[in-house]
Length: 571
Length: 44
Image (cartoon, rainbow over all chains, first blue to last red; front, top):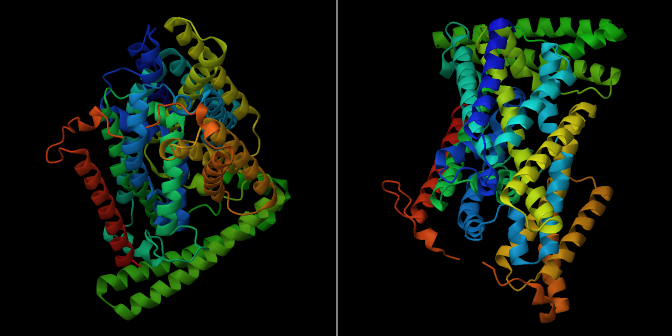
């Protein structure tokens, strides 16, 4: 990065943050601080929901996913549109009618205070423990590639987001997210056009897709019923629906975004905006990765995209083995490039037999390349077991730094930081609001002025921001940490969704039954997690199903008397 | 389940009820999946 890139980076990030703070200066009204301006329109809400979900790692890692595995990952989002419709039809009108600040307040209306505290507590535990990851994950990748200090990267980006989130609350988050997502889209579109322009002469966009298809990178929809396959339309529709329903319907970081709407109409249209554009957005980001794959068939890629890790290990004593693997990779790649050129020539000449032969030879060379890459990964992992063996997160940033002109490099790095800040802001805002509304105001200080609660919310938001920065600074587990946080989310999400499904659809179940059912279900999930080795995604289903089933069973056992604690405000 | 706000106009030309909006979103979803399936078929 040169001076121009740094001007773009610092100017855009600080400019957006400063604008958000200036627009929301002097806010003392609790409703505005927690829910945002009453006139917020659907497009702002839609972009805010999108920006909260899409973290920096989405834009850093997803192209790497496309590079490695193709378009199949897009199926994971197939459940999202249906889930968003359910949220718009069922969840949203109830939240708005009760004029709640947080989703967990609704549990208090529907059941009782202890169930509300349980829902809020589970959210704070899960989000609070994972608070640092949104800052840590992009910081580790960007600092490694750029040679920046990791702690300085974490502290600088963390303090910026804490500053404007604390100052302006929900309104500042919505305002800044709108511009941040604009920067992100501009960066992605610019990268796309540079990528297409850099494809070899004679290789059209359609030709690039044909070539990618030849390497099985364009399998976007898989109708297979094989449960061992990682991404299929069925797992995407069922698992994706379940996850998206938990996330959009019960996670305060999302609920707070769409409750900021000036009316039910604005909130609903904001959700429908995401229902329409979520799949094409993910497709586009994956397609970038596929095109980078095609690009690197004609340009020599590094044998391992995390070149800093490769260099470190090479200096530690595995240098001979790593260099020999690099040479093998180079030779296989050169052969593959020759065969691909022959394939293109044969295709242009309409020679089907030569085309098939060149394509087969290129595939064989590609297998050699992948073998050299796999062995390099194994050597790196053996030499440093804590280091990641997965370099997919480094594919896109390597392409950007090596191939984009200055100025655009700054724009793309800004886009990654903008994504990190926008999702972090949504999380901090939700953590601060939940702590204020569901814990402080509900339990500790029931009667106070709006100004007092706004001040308390600012302190709690700052507290969670500092927790996040501290966690990110002391986290030293690389990608294992990301997986740990995903596991953590899945362990709690199912039970929280179960609480809300019982609240919405099982009117005869009261607070005592669902409270104990949720605790028992959470205990069951912990116990199963300790004993089983199934995919962590299943804990979403198990937790939810256990919570619903146990609620019914306990309610049946305690009978009508146990329903006296059920609030009459059932939907 | 239905509140007065549910009757609020969508403000969208051609999609005056929420039922129609949701139907349109489902149709767009089916269209995306169809296009992706066609892409898969075309380049496999």
